[in-house]
Image (cartoon, rainbow, N blue to C red):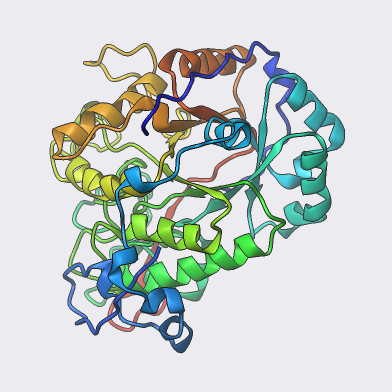
Length: 425
């Protein structure tokens, strides 16, 4: 950005008022042309039409000049409202876990934004959504939505062949020892993760997310979570390894190039031009994870392809977004400060990777002032939340989101037929 965003004011609060029952959860491709069905990645600019509705989509038929543009062309915040949205002090909560009294407490304790966790698999949480959004507005709080992209049980059940796969490395089996070995015409998939990194899933997920967002009352922010690959991308078993959707030859989809996430964000921006779209990104494997007893169980992810591929996908996203969310779920990801790094916390380390790791992998550093950290508030002690808020203040990030309900990152192996692409009973 052309100017530094002001650091957040520290929330000096009693965090216990936020804690409530946990609920499990979580643009444009243009110039289409015919592509082959080989396993080589294809440019998002060259996606073949999937169906008639996609062929008739005017934004798909537009020229490629509307593709990823430098972030410097984006307008900067020019009002107090825009600045508040770019610098949220937010809570993430299921819609059925708010009421006027709780919202009043949020406002008194310095919260300026309520991000509603939208989970289509739990329709009860969406009952009276319009009334609940109105409560947020009447409390003088900004309304945001948290939309889970890759982790989609609905699409995984409808199209099991679209899920990411577990190939090449078998270290993930230590967590699922009873999983059968796939036959030559089968492949093990990562249920229920359907990343946007392939031709088929990009279109389906784009349509799903736009339809879901349009079914909700208008909001001021939309957080798009999980735009990378699935956990344990290379088969190492590490939840942070997300650089690909298929690390092997048994492919059931046509892969896209490194601009997939950026173009997905542009699609959503095009559909909601008056809404701040925030892509949410995780970090990658760490050096200590490569130890035999580490999260990668001896696989050399840190010095391998992981961070290189991560950077190639993140840089286009950085080019089209002024702010980026950092999914910093310390407990969910089983994180500790790296042994060889001089960081007081994993949150500080994770934030710092946006400045250090891209630059080490032929990319550009992303300043902390452009990051919105997403931290766990569920099953967390008050003093730990206060510590994390203190770290956010000291880091000078753009803003943060305290997740009071669970952001589901779980996965399990599921065997799917490779050639026929139909699920095994």
